[in-house]
Image 1 (cartoon, rainbow, N blue to C red):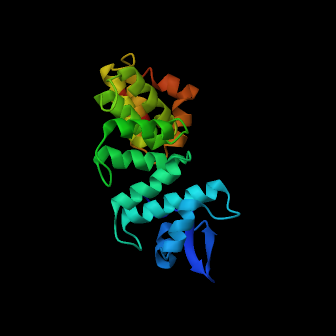
Image 2: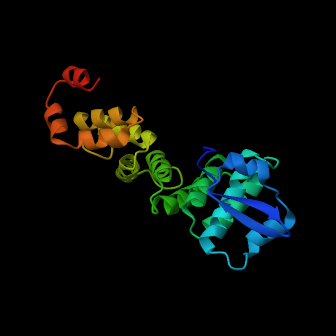
Length: 227
């Protein structure tokens, strides 16, 4: 997880109460967080006056601290516990994180079916990396029967959201004609996007008339134009 983006709140003991600090980074949280029993209890049972979304975010953030061992001893079982609390309330990031834990067996028994279920819940809420992971599970037949068409569909959704791994995976399927009709032009486009940190800009460019003209060129000509 990227420490600059994962955490949106931090929990701090202040004057006998709990203060939620918005828009802080995980690195900042690790300097101030005090994981005290009463704070943990409040995040488990709810804090009066706090919106459910804030609660879910706090549970997810606490799980992230345990996952990374920042400010607390690293403990994947505790991370899974907090992720599950938020995931069961529909918090998409926690659902994706729980899927990761089930996939590798950290803090929970390794279970491809459980991973597939949680990735799907997050994927249906638009989490691109969960969509990509779900595509991989369908491609490999892990947690569900193998289905190249479903794999391609989930890769496509993640790819359009800018996930570079999904873009590379989709390119591979187009090259091989797995789950989609073989199409080297689309394979080239998605491969190009997967290499770029400016994929949104390139996505617009590749969807334009200029791309349609470029797609008629030979591969060597296309490369000379784009590089």
